[in-house]
Image 1 (cartoon, helix red, strand yellow):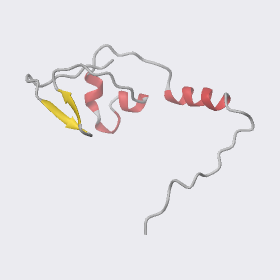
Image 2 (cartoon, one colour; image 1 turned 180 degrees about the vertical axis):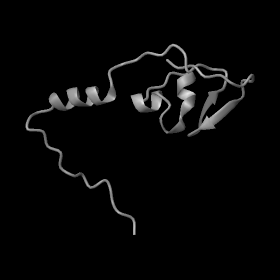
Image 3 (cartoon, one colour; image 1 turned 135 degrees about the vertical axis):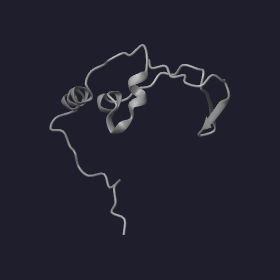
Image 4 (cartoon, helix red, strand yellow; image 1 turned 90 degrees about the vertical axis):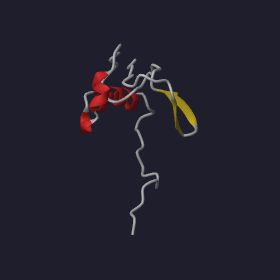
Length: 83
């Protein structure tokens, strides 16, 4: 669990119509790249009570190995090229 509290007040901010508080503790889950401060996202390196799970690539490999074989990875059409 990562806890972040840099501001001394307890005023709610809203994100997607849900309040969150600067004095509250929040748990976040991120991949190993982001947890290590990747893409200058260094705030995640300041968290406390860190719990390190499996490396994201290793977890993906285990997931794919548990899929029915042969595994099908056909395009799903979710990505398109903008004009």
